[in-house]
Length: 245
Image (cartoon, rainbow, N blue to C red; front, side):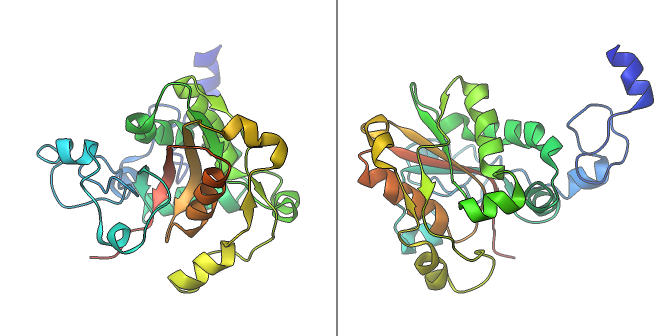
């Protein structure tokens, strides 16, 4: 049956729709434009760093590889990873999932996030997506971070807790503005509801989001979890914004 379906509906590239050999794959052109973060990276935010990753493995595991941004801005989480750089195919796929109702992308993209999260996983960890405000959820019909988090939790056999965080204030999109503006925009916008606080206390948490730029939204989420007694907290995203070189 599966073979017959492939004859009628052959696998397509996730990004452009061109024919590919396997479901959930990329065509050669889109693969070349996909910057998977697999070498040296910042231990706090996952941004790629110079190096081949071999000689830096011990430092990365010890949390000693830290980018300039994470040296300048204190992160309220312990460690972070990202599957892709937010440009080229990575940016296109993130935007398709977020704004184009491409829920069919979530399984493959979620599996990529799960692989990126592997070094962060701890036994009995809670997987928590960054929430969207009810107003935005009613408009979009889904939370892309929750779709990714569900896949991450399933891949690692962890508990998925999408209700652990709640966004209590509607905020403008974080696409524009200075770093300070972005942090001010989400300050106090996320909380752990009182009824959920006992679940968070003393638990390791893996925060999941689709994109990290300044890290302001993830910081607000991590601060809310810390206030509820959770920790240690790690973060993983589908795509990490990078500076042009």
